Length: 63
Image (cartoon, rainbow, N blue to C red; front, top):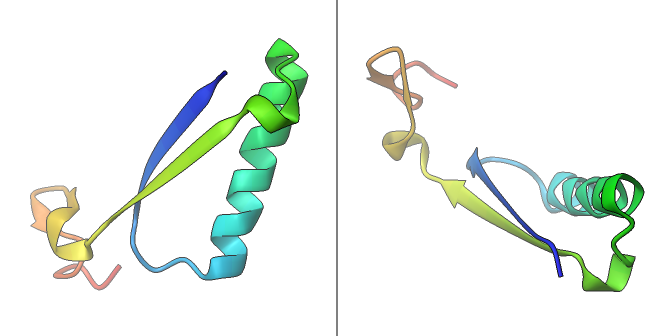
């Protein structure tokens, strides 16, 4: 059972998160032949205040 964990900055819509889960599931199925029903995807959203880019928080940079 493949488990794919993705950390990303907060702010995506439900539709975007669902699309990412679907695409990652399809990729695992194609790449390693994993049955789609066995693929697990975990999205971990990081608050912009906890996401650093070039020494600044993403929030401070307006991202």
